[in-house]
Amino acid sequence: MNGGVRLNAGENIKIEAPKGWSGRFWPRTGCTFDQSGNGKCVTGDCGAKLNCNGAGGEPPVSLAEFTLDSPEDFYDVSLVDGYNVPMSIIPSGGTGGCKSVNCVSDLNTKCPEDLQQKDTGRVVACKSACMAFNTPEYCCTGAFGGPNTCKPTNYSKIFKESCPDAYSYAYDDLTSTFTCKDANYTISFC
Image 1 (cartoon, helix red, strand yellow):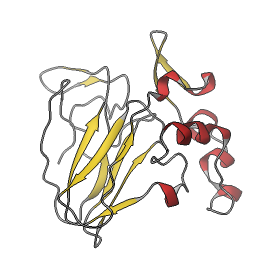
Image 2 (cartoon, rainbow, N blue to C red; image 1 turned 90 degrees about the vertical axis):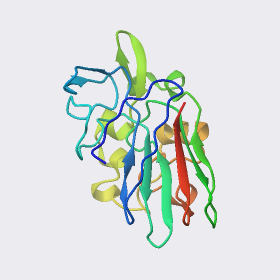
Image 3 (cartoon, helix red, strand yellow; image 1 turned 90 degrees about the horizontal axis):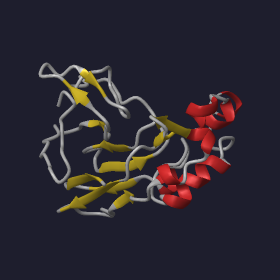
């Protein structure tokens, strides 16, 4: 998986992940690429290339995160890096908890003004408070670098209220990490 594929509305693609794979999927929006795969995206860009080749998506971006076969699969929807598009993860054929997880609320319409990322005057993504303010209490660093000192903020609570299953800040593990064994997963960008 070298990362990067164009999907139009209603299209899908099947990706076979190798055993033990760990990584992220994210939606990119407003993309234009030439025939060589060079270009840019309004959200989720990864170095101005169609194929990300290991580079992560530029925040703010919604994430589907996976660690497979460890010994079960761990998965989540994360808004820790912000939000750009509603998404869901639906497991099938697995055993264990195997809960469908989603963030289908359009957070761009609820995004506080100081977190808004705009393109041509339109809100296209909602930044995390860490990205917007870059302070230890929002980034869970320094004196706030642990689960006992980094707590939900008024900003992360907006994300959590709209998307209860999704990670809203770095230590949101208890309500936001899900497990399944030997499943297939459908990731939908809504």
